Length: 166
Length: 244
Image (cartoon, rainbow over all chains, first blue to last red; front, side, top):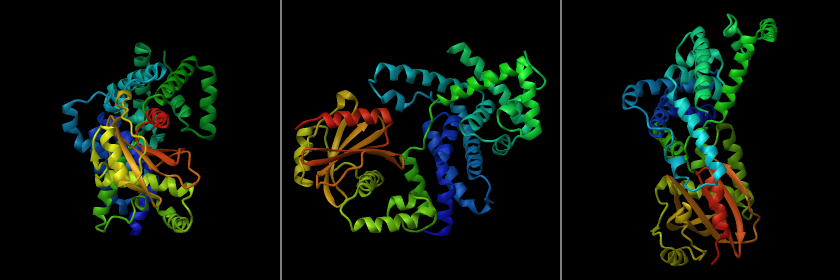
């Protein structure tokens, strides 16, 4: 295996779960997330020579977000498939406690999915992917000040929605 | 209720401030009710988001990406799928390890690697099923004839795991019978091969696949799949409980 491929696999592939998670939360559809990540990994590999070190995860997530953006207009028009997808629906009869937990999780997932895009992405990047303000600013192509105010509004909105429905 | 310092407080809570700036923000937080409320809300939001679904890249997507990278590097696919999946630094160490293991009777590591490999190989090649039948009266004799092993074959459709067929495969150099099940969009392979007294790994998770091993009678068993933990455990319980 050539050296470039090896370096790519060592640095970028470990972040595939994060890439998928971001694509999934942004697109809100398993099928779209698959396509976005596949596209992103290919673009990342082709552009790997331009990656000058630094945080590979933030670099990869930037590409994922761009792929979602460029694939996005069609997807967004289509609206989103509800988050309660085949996985959750197909688990079949589960013990009662697990079912309650699963339904609480579904409600949460739906709440996240319903947040406006610009709030959803900062919240996911900060809370799930543990990105710093500077990294979020780079990934989303927004000034840090905007990241901070969006994050504040996203949290307030999410907190309020949670109070209303849980 | 809000405070002009709320963005600074948020930065402090997010670990963005250091040194004096952090100390200032901390001092402010101790006396400002609005910022304390903000801190409590932010903690609630974090707790809630932790309980949301953690999406993981499906195994099939990982394979597709590998295939794509293979095409992109314009070379033949790596000798073994997991050589491709393994990270760069680990590859030579892994290769050395496997070379050593091949000389020994199947060890715990070989077995774990072997069933996961067989499962992945079958998924990639699309050769997961050689006899397509949900009828255990069809699958069982087919396996006996083609794999030389006659494990119990049960359809757990009522419990959510539908028997979709079987195939003959190989686990660490032994012929193995594989019962193939479907659960939602996921496939579960149940391997069975003659017990040669080798110690078995218990359970594990590698490259997105869960595996679980056990002995029953004169056979060793392994279940491998990318279903979620709960469904996997349920399947293992069912499979372990079945009798001839």
